[in-house]
Image (cartoon, rainbow, N blue to C red):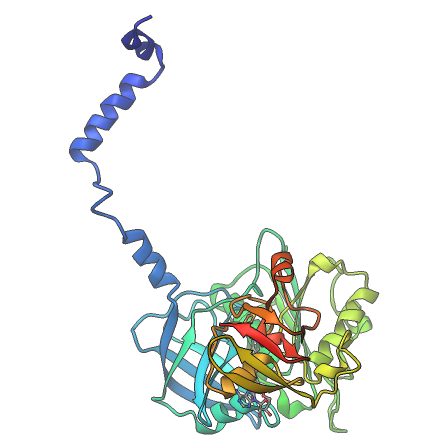
Amino acid sequence: MARKEIIGKISGYDEIIRENAILEKYGFDYQAKRGEVKSIIDALHPQGLNLTVAEVAQETATAKSIKLVSADGFLPPFQAGQYINLFVETGGVRTSRPYSIASAPTQTGHYEITIRRVEDGFVSNYLLDDLKTGDKLSSTSPSGNFHYNPHFHGDKLAFIAGGSGITPFMSMIRELADKNLGRRLHLFYGCRVEDDVIYRDELDRIAAVHSNFTWDLVISEPAPSFSGIRGFISAGLIKERLEGLDWTFYVCGPEAMYDFCLPELTKLAIPARKIRVEVMGVPKNIAAQPGWPQNVKAGAVSRVAIKGKKTISAPASEPLMISLEREGVVIPALCRSGECSLCRTKLLSGSVYQPNGVKLRKSDRAFGYIHPCMAYPITDIEILL
Ligand SMILES: Cc1cc2nc3c(=O)[nH]c(=O)nc-3n(C[C@H](O)[C@H](O)[C@H](O)COP(=O)(O)OP(=O)(O)OC[C@H]3O[C@@H](n4cnc5c(N)ncnc54)[C@H](O)[C@@H]3O)c2cc1C
Ligand code: FES
């Protein structure tokens, strides 16, 4: 059979030829549109943000909210629960710290972050004491996986927050209020003392208006006059307050809260897939973590050679990233908690300790990559940057 005859038998062939001819005459020239999609994606997910401090508000004696606007006129959208990594220069050191966005994604004009003072904290103290309206900062774009996923999380969400761990939840609760969302939210908010409670009036106001949002304040060291729930967020309290246990649990707070609350969820037989945990930085006492080599004293100091560059001293008790930054060596960072892989660095020789929770890929282990934001040098090492 001749080629023309065969083609003529293919159903739809003539229509396609006709459509092609029309497109050639009147359709888009995709060459001319080259780069358009990329420019939209770049606007939605820029590499970095230039920010201006629009407002600083005292929330509690130890926490301030900071309203950040774009110096470039546009802030990328984000999912409630995500964070930005804020770059700062203080004491001659360039470093960064992640802060969850507490404002709702519906608020497109600014991001609000709320920073709580950490005793001897290098950056939190600087931000709380020195930052003022008009100051310029830079940050990463919003990132992180601690956000609602309608395909997996269902419509009953229980939030367990401790201290400044309330911030990602505040974004989710404000989003519920702004959009009048139908999902059911219950917040358990644990603080040491009542004076530490951030956003209390706003939480009460939202709960008064939206019956699908409820919350419990739990105070561990209350004043005698406190009439609310005392102690910690326990299995008993969770069971008593939630209708059934078929909820997705989100947990965010200080290290001690995970140590207490995660076993409480296990007591209630909540499956691991229904528990989402946000990391809030590095452990306070690294030498107390499981697997820490007992022959290494936390105060030990190692030599870190950066191949082809310089050699610095680094204490075993401090994440390698901090020791590097102190010496003016800044590596890309996002979560600073071992999770995102952005700081992935090749370890050429020597050993580091990396606690549980550092999300190393199998290939990282096989080819000797480490996450310096959560890697502690326990011998002299050489790295490639
Ligand atoms: C995803 C995520 C979201 C977060 N969201 C919030 C939030 O909403 N609100 C909030 O308050 N916190 C939040 N955090 C915690 C926040 O990122 C900081 O860890 C916190 O503010 C404490 O930082 P700091 O620098 O004050 O203390 P640290 O980093 O713990 O500093 C402790 C010690 O290290 C030393 N040090 C640290 N860096 C250096 C350096 N480069 N050079 C010299 N010395 C150094 C200091 O001397 C200090 O004694 C979040 C963390 C993560 C991972
Ligand atoms: S900065 Fe995210 S893993 Fe190190």
